[in-house]
Length: 69
Length: 275
Image (cartoon, rainbow over all chains, first blue to last red):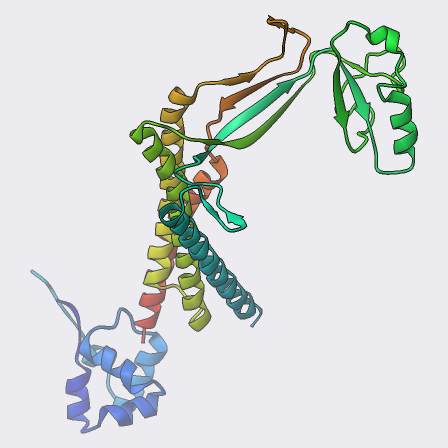
């Protein structure tokens, strides 16, 4: 499984829409969708910091590691 | 911006070359099918099944013990020619002798082409064991079907692969004109061009190797009263291995570059998926 992105859960907890978050952190909705769907290859520290700031959470709340075995 | 202009220019250049080479091939095939001798009014083609096909050869002409006439386009040409024209040469010295008259134009720089050994180099230049070697093509025709088929393949494989290369290059530059970046098409087409160049050279070399066993050597000698004139001009025409190492290496380089492009494409894709 590897790294799981729990952005959907955090957005639901904060009752925030994807569009609002993308506008707040300055990335496109398409890119946010890539991040949410787990298709992204990497995430920049600046993007992670911006998401954490807007959602008032820690990186661990968004990213989770699940072992394949 | 500058690269965009260059890419656009190259796109149109290769598109025109592609069109012209297709026209040339169409013309060639049409003459093979619709004409009996490759002639159509005042136009004719070099390669035709009735006439024969181009075959690479090396031509070597030897002119031992010759009088060489130098000439130039300037005013001194007439003066020089006047001195060494046969009627001005001491006719007694030429009596009962075989004389090869080799005319060289324009006037070469001293010692650049032929070693002068005569007593009066300005008037008469004697050339010992001199020869001229040049690469070229002769038209070869064959009665055997398989030889004819090989000659046909040799000519048309080069032509068709060239058309395909021009097409691929125009497609690459068309894509780059829209977006100057790594793409799957760029990788596949670059690799294909490399493979085409390599295979074209290998196929041509193999065919020439096979055909050289059939064609052997053509020799032109001079005879007088049935006896060979050893001092006469004679010409050797030998089959030439038409292998272009530059094109072969270019093909390998393109294949290596396509691997590099794949690396670039992967990096770009990874960069696109970095949020």
